[in-house]
Image 1: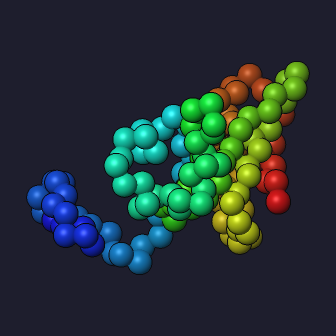
Image 2: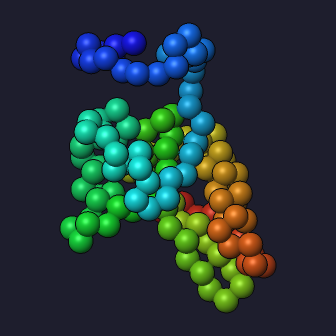
Length: 126
């Protein structure tokens, strides 16, 4: 298999491929995720304009979320006593449907990260 630059890519021979128009689900990536660190060409997943936001001056790689397979913002957890808030900072506007999906997936993420929290909230910063 070759990509748009005619480079040879290795994958499972004969593996099923989704249609090119098939949307990718919303996903949350942790800090220092390999998908942002382990590729020579990251343009397939993140815009150059957003790389400076994700990779900080002190060499930290922020936690990010993907919308349709591309990095679309960052996230962090704020804790206060028995509550936990997932704060989403998108790089641009999101649709109502996407916001709902981010909230749904975000609540699942919070349940996993903060199992002892009595109160869980997902908040998007505009």
